Amino acid sequence: MPELPDIEVIREFLAARVVGQNIVSVEHVGTLVVRNLMPGDAGGLLDGRRLTAAGRYGKFLLLALDGGIWLVINFMLSGRLMYCPAITRMGQRTFLVLNLSSGQQLRYTDATQMGKVYLTDDVARVPTYREQGPDALDPAVTLDVFRERLRRHPGEIKSTLTNQAFVAGIGNAYADEILFRARIYPFRRRPELSAADVEQVYVAMREVLGEAIDELRRRIGSNIHEEIRDFLKVHGKANQPCPRCGTPISQVSANQRITNFCRTCQPGTLIRQT
Image (cartoon, rainbow, N blue to C red; front, side, top):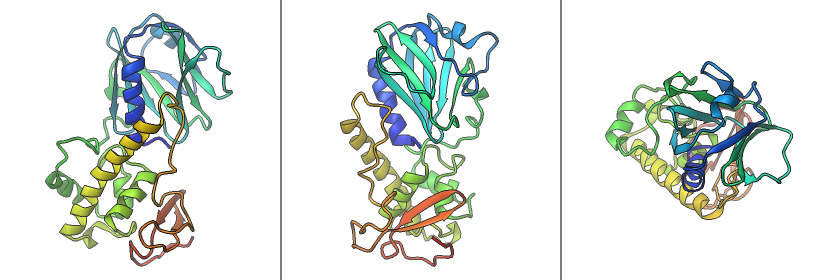
């Protein structure tokens, strides 16, 4: 699932390579995935538009078009963007193709069809967009702001980090990484956290997300459809040695979500079964 670092690097790429181009034609408008929130045909509304900006809020990618129109992408589990020559083989799960004035194509693919591409003249109409909290890397989210927002969420700290109403942009993978960096047990509840614990989580959030952006920026290049996670310390590394202490990384499955952590570096009472 693309999270804040992935989408930020995609945004940077599109800002440098796609912004300023015109959409000369549109193909493969899959109506189950491409949701037009405006009157008229989506392909007709997009055809001939100029891409004017690339933005991001949390896990949403926002592509601005001339005329006050937006393409807003919520990637969900398996949504991907591909920037490629038109001769590149078309995948079966391709739901939107923008033919650009450079001769390249921008394609949206989605193996599970869970993600959505919204066409709108008002981003506030996009489902769940308005319910988001501040972006996790917003400079306005100071430690004091983070503490104050956290007080509203008495549940487990990992669930809170992945709650987009708390801060936007963190998903399952990077929540694991943040809590490993902070040495905090993922299933501790907020009232159990000391002031020092909360500061550790906040600092780790900023560090982990920033470092991941730097790593992905260095490695992805034009392959924005690829998801690179091999550099993560604990997420997806079940039974591998902890890079800090050597203890095998634990994996717990609950609520259709996998959590990876180190029992030695992140001690706590494990009440769930692997």
